[in-house]
Amino acid sequence: MQAGGDTKERIRTRGVEPWHQPHWDWKAAANFLCGGAGAGLFACATLASLRGAPAWPAGLFALGLVAAGLVLLLFKIGRPLRFVYVLLQPQRSWMAREAWAAAVFFPTALAALWFGNASLTMIAALLGFVFLYCQAMILKAAKGVPIWRARNIVPLMISTGLAEGAGLFLGAVAVLPWLEPGDFPVDVFVALLAVARAWEWHFYLANLRKDGAPARSIEILGACRGWFLTLGLIVPVAFVALGHVLTDHVLTDVAQVLFGLAGVLVFATGWALKFIIVTRAAYNQGFAISHTPVRGSGLPGPAVKPGWAS
Image (cartoon, rainbow, N blue to C red; front, side, top):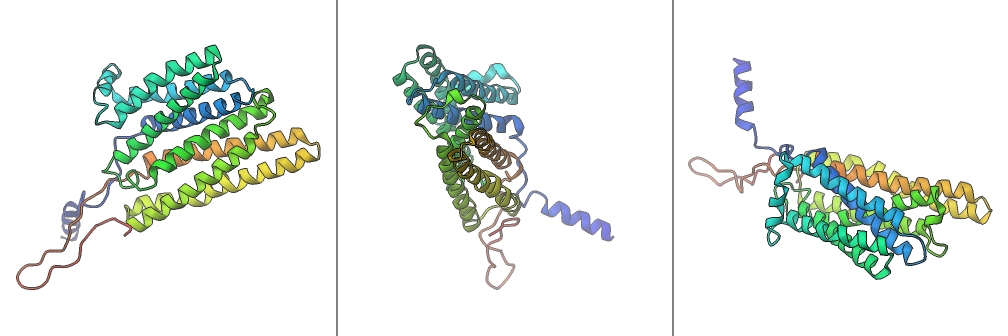
């Protein structure tokens, strides 16, 4: 009898609390990971090229990253040849706008790298930024998942994409020093982007707790706070500062290793956080009622939002 009662209770409450969204898996997340880092890397390579460094090595790798994310997304569709339908609704779909931005970004960037034209390279970098913005707005427009529609999701996605790309560039400079111009401090630039990203992450999580979100989402994202701030901000900034001290003492090789590790940490923590936001912490809205109904006389009860942190 007790077992029957437990079964009845489970049936009555099934589907009421927020449930983990089943549609966006690692292939969908790869588009955000590769696309954001690729756009950020191309932007950083463009800034370095304006100070005399060659743009093509990092620029080509950046394009490869963006392309890899889009190809993985095609396999997520199930019928890759039907991707042309994505292009049909740019006036109402951020995914269509992302596709159009990519369609303009790739040929412009390839032409800029081939001809080595500074103006065209800057235009390509701006198109890459538009692509990154469209990616952020895809999440913002997904209203059914509260942590995607959150107030700070767009600046968070943009800041982490730029930080990831700059971190990749700094890691590449540690191995290939000729990629860095003498008067462009990539390490300081990466540290500043890490600070800006941590700032956006702090307000993103604070606003989620203030505005309300599924309790499981808050729990998962809250567990990220310690390692993200430590490995994505404190350690990289400390490595950059220590690297400059060692450079002043002519220990340049050790400093380059520290700079490279700082860049890799900024890049890797950004990827890990975005993967968690897109997949593991993405819980749907669930169901709620504006007030608790009563039978007969009496006053209605308060609103009920099962499974929410506030």
